[in-house]
Amino acid sequence: MKRYFIFILAVLMSAALLLTACQPASEDEAPTIASYEGYSNIPDLGNIAGAKRVEGLSSAAAARLSVDPESVFVYELGDIPADALKIWTKELKARGFEKSGTLEEAGNTVTWYSDDRKIGVVAGYMDTDKQGGMDAFGVFLVNKNLSGKYVDIDYETVQEAWGNANNGASFFIDDKKIFGYGYIGSADDGFLSKNTDSSSALMLVEGAHPRYVHEWDKTVYACLSDRLVAVDTKEKDPEEAVTTLVEGSLQSLQIVNETLYYTTKSGLYCCDFDGENVVKITGKKMKDAYVVGDKVYYCDTEDDNTEHAYSLMTEADTRVTEEAVSSFFLGSKGNGYYIAERDVEPEPADEEDETTDEETTKAAEDSETSEETTVAEEEDEEPATAWNLIRVSLKDGKTTELATVREGTALVGIGNKVYYVSDEHNGQIYSISKSGGTPKRVTRDEDCRNLMTFHDMILYYDYEDETEEGLEHIYISTPDGFMKSDILR
Image (cartoon, rainbow, N blue to C red; front, side, top):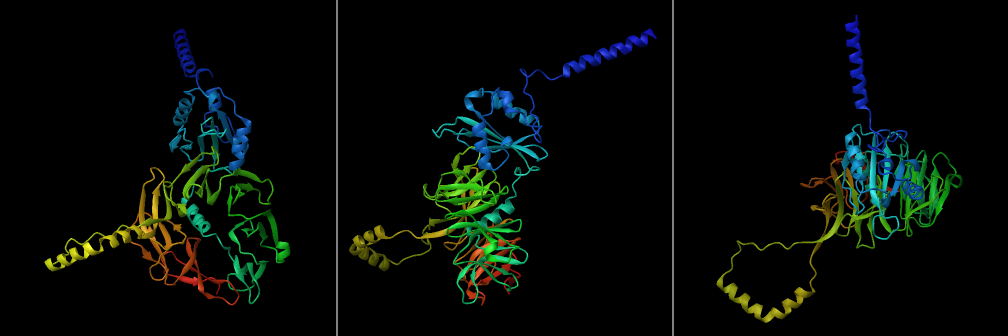
């Protein structure tokens, strides 16, 4: 019995030693894990660096993102030891997080996702004092299971909605009604609603031309020439249905994280659905602004109309293209698509063409007598240009021409294809694979305009054939053009 007792005691002592060896080190020796609700797997940079969160900067970044202030942490770089970020990112990797992007002091953000893709981190350097140097570091904790947070971006949904916004999103269609611009009989034109079976047209605001029309929870939001309005779709009296939320001329409108984002000549703003709690995000002049994740993509009119990306968290601004763009949208995580005017390369001379000695002599004589005139004409002649559909890599900026398009057209994307209006066949809609190839004609209607999408279908206006009730014909077609119908008949 004594022998068994000694054996059991030895086993217990060995187990105790093993348990002691496996205990975590003290806080001074190893970073602790934060215990935020929903983020328990994310190392706390503040504890690792021994730094305190800057409340004012954190709250400001949270307001720009329209998220819970408790999910944004901003630290001054002077409070973070040189190796603290390396330790923090090492701890993230040890817990199953994968990096996407490059973390540089130029302000680019980097995204980390956990293995289950349910929680993650967006981080980046910040220029908080606007002195041209990075003086802070921001961390945004994300969880797609919580309201207002995001991790994964559905680029197929993004590209369709973005394409509609590029064309002004001039109408919105729900299950039974269409909201947009038109007229009823001989009455004045304006913002109206109409059943998709071409019945029960109702003028909501006379003389108004709505743009950026969106719907959320049975309410339609639209930008008129001088205000942002909300329309209660359940109310039949126009005076009771229409409510003004924001006064002034708006240049874009988008619903993100259950918040209204809009631009004016003064910059980018956001507010609640009732128009309250207005926050000015940035004073940058943004044309065709569109929010995706933590960034705002826009055409910078002060930088030769090139496309830029503005970080809502770090406020860093990055140029995406090196040329002026039109109708830009992201068609995937790594590629953008846009239209640009480029010079047309002259066709090379045919090497097989041969001339006779007599023709050569005559050409030489003509050259001597008209040399000065030819030089003058070449100096005055402008190079030929064409509007091209272009793919740009967000990683390295490399561009690829895909097709020639009609000037002023708007791009839309569905799945792995981009749709556009071509000058061929008098302005019909074509599609092309995002990877390039031969364009395919989709429609047989001339002068197609206001190209948009709805539930993976193609929509477009026909201005040549108007309905008696006022709204021009709006055709809906399968992406391959095989089936088409007029939704107002």
